[in-house]
Length: 150
Image 1 (tube, rainbow, N blue to C red):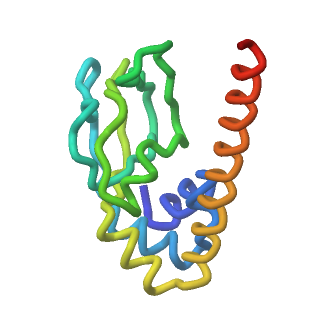
Image 2: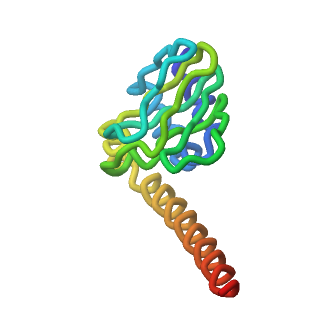
Image 3: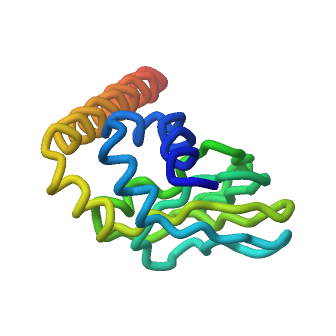
């Protein structure tokens, strides 16, 4: 893929679309494309996380540490977005169901891009804050429902 086609592809990823074309160009130039063979883990639950991945093609399965139903992940999905901005560990194992490819976005690259594009940093911050508030609201609703069962 060319840099222009990488930028166009990254624009389809909701969080990344917030940063704008110039900032996406920085990411596209610095990101690494990796091929993941069928059956191979992209990463395992509990591992240190220093990057996020965008699925370019193929299908992947995510199994969370907490159990539950595995989730299917396909092209355009951003996996491990928190790792682009903070030290964290992987909460799930992600395995290729067929040969696929991913773009690896290292934390160092993403943070340098945010330093160079402060408007992009504000948009990312606002989006992350909005989603965190939505999650907190959902948790409060569940807590209230569970308290009502007592």
